[in-house]
Amino acid sequence: MLSFLPAEAQWRLGLRAGLNGSNLVHRSDRQDKRTTGAVVSRLNGGLQLEIPLEDQWYINTGIHYSGKGANMFLTESLKKDSQRVRLNYLEIPVMVVYKFPSEKENQFLISSGPYLGYGFNGTINWKGGFIPTKKHIHRKEEEEYRRFELGWMISAIYEIKSRYGLRLDFSKSLLNIQHPETRQKNIVIGFSFYWFLKKMSNEQ
Image (cartoon, rainbow, N blue to C red; front, side, top):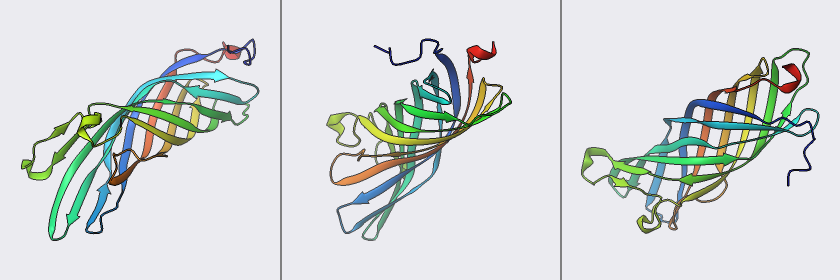
């Protein structure tokens, strides 16, 4: 099944954790409604799997939690209100990675690729509490946010001693994440630290 991989390929499993700066890009078909978002801080973390291909090329995948959302300010005629949108996703990225050659154990890496997110336990809170908090907003019957998100991610990484790393990610939804009438996309800048459970086999 994976016979296209080199016979000596050694997979590496690692852990990652960090912070997201998240916002929502919003467009509406209604002329009297304008929505802007403010960045919120959320957590990210999970598993990271590295699969060598050839030379300096790798596949990076895994599964991780990614918190997203925004503080939204709604303006409709003369009425102004605000809401806090909190979205939770389990994401599986498939990233193509290039490691720049280095004579030392420290390397710069770049990667890019799609990701698929599964939304769960999202909430919407309205300022002042006059409207009850909406929960489980990814459910179809709530008619708020779609269960799945398809997006694209670009990463810049600095790997230390071929085992630890600092990564900066930029990701954005490719498709609408809301049910019809309004159109929203996630836009996230993430920072995280990762560490593999073992070093590369050729350095053990």
